[in-house]
Length: 182
Image 1: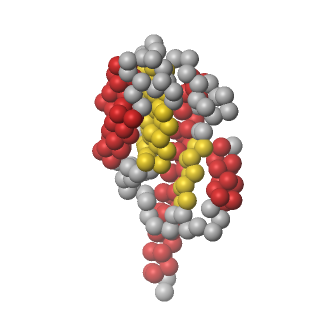
Image 2: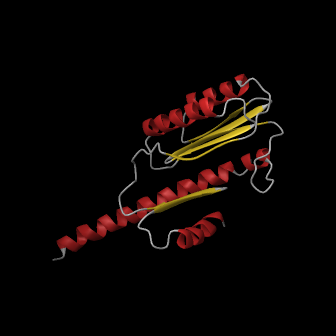
C-alpha cells in the first residue's frame, strides 16, 4: 500500500524529471537515469529533531552507540526510556552500510541531542530515536507505534532493491543474448 502510494505520488511530484526519490512514513522509492545501486550516498535528505525533552541525552547517546556497533542492514535497540532504529537500503555492502549509519548516527547525536525524538535520513540509510511518550509531529502518529512498522519498512526496502537488481540482471542478460544473436 505504501509503495503504491509512493509510486503514484512521485509520478505527480516528479513527472518531468529524469530522477526522483520519495520517503513516506513506511517506505522509500527512488529512480534516476544514472546508476545508484551499490553506491554510497550520505547526502542529508531529511533531518528532523523534536522539541527538547529535558533528558540529559546520555540515554539517547547509549542507544545510538549500540545501533552503530550492531551488525546488519536493519538495527533496533533501546532502553526503558529511549528506542532507536537504523537501516540501510539493500544494495549497500555491510561496510558501506556501516559507514553510512555511522554518519547518520553521528549527525543525530550532535544535532538532536536533548530532543524528544530525531530522524536523520541520508541518501542510502537512516537512523532514528524516540524517547518514551514522545509524539512525532506527523498527523499525531505516536512514535512508539511507528516502530512496530519498521520491520515492514525493512522488508519493503529489501524487496524494492531486489526487484531493481532483478531488472538490471534481466536487462544485462537480454543485451548479452541480443549481441550473440546478431
